[in-house]
Image 1 (cartoon, protein in one colour):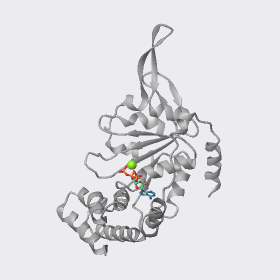
Image 2: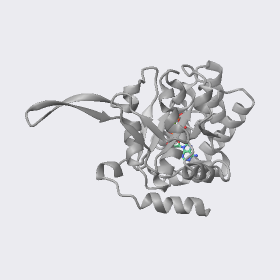
Image 3: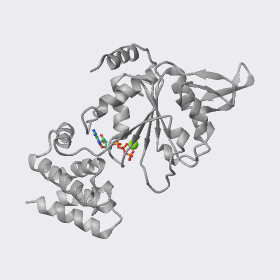
Image 4: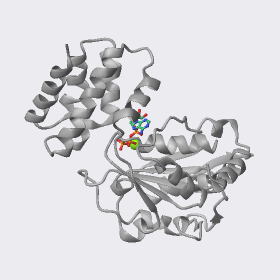
Length: 287
Ligand SMILES: Nc1ncnc2c1ncn2[C@@H]1O[C@H](COP(=O)(O)OP(=O)(O)OP(=O)(O)O)[C@@H](O)[C@H]1O
Ligand SMILES: [Mg+2]
């Protein structure tokens, strides 16, 4: 591991966090699909560059962010973007509290402000689901200024040195809009593909150490087939989702693997022909 990351890890792990915030530290376990990908993300985070993870559903984007949090022992706060996301959901809101018998107005910090002040990782999920007018409020947070003037309180917030941003998108899905150029420009961007072959085998060995050997073989062979069909354009990309394969493996330990594959993979595809194809591929591996 390079010196930059080592030094940054030392700094970040030395910070004290409250018990509540310690609960926000992620678990590790991300398996890097390409040599260097995970380390390159750590370099970008160490350099305080906002990181954008682009990839299909169930490719491990959230897992990667959680693993970065684990690596730096740094709490991670999440925002889920939707069309309803507004400035208050990001920055916080005013509320009335009773102090010594009188009503006082207090501001409750939202996830962005809290992460900036406490030096947490801010994970912005599905950043391209947000309304385009909501996110420009983050521009000064995401560029070299690393600061924000809270429009509700006038407070100027300078980010803690550890504050880091990781965002994720599923490109091209229904309901998503292309990211605004100025927003996208503030990130360094990583493509996150599904893991395959030996890496998937390694992941499944870790996750399912007690599952029968032939079940491992079945799922890994099916995963290879699904990936090949996706590459040929015969199956939707989600068909090879690692999440779905993992669910199939979970279920298959308690039921006929073909039914497990039907529920966890085939039934989630919209196209009838694709469903049949998945089940045929699976059947060909069942003895
Ligand atoms: N490369 C990987 N290493 C470790 N686990 C992985 C990997 N890829 C997928 N997984 C596992 O697959 C499941 C889905 O991963 P995750 O939730 O991170 O996907 P995602 O890319 O965030 O999907 P979505 O876009 O739907 O939010 C998790 O249980 C995760 O552990
Ligand atoms: Mg996710």
